[in-house]
Image (cartoon, rainbow, N blue to C red; front, side):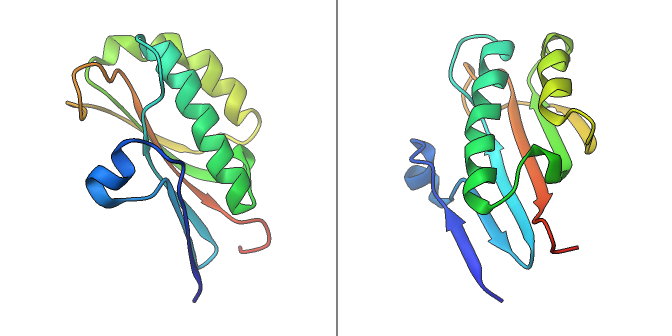
Length: 122
């Protein structure tokens, strides 16, 4: 099995020792991603852009995502993100979990992790 690692150049990749995404066995595993900005909405929009680039580099898109996990330190900040999440996933909604938890820095308001199936792999 071939394993491909996708790096995005994020500051924590070399600090912690991970990559943005790993493609293995027809699956694309995108690491938890925090975007830029100060609010959950700004960070969500940015995280989706970063994730979208990783998915494209792997050879798929949001339409191929089968699982997504949202992590927020305050669940009250999640509903304002819903419209952009509906737009990103459109007619292909994945199985979803939202977890209220601490994130890597106090400034982080939302972290998004996805798993996708490469087209033709299923």
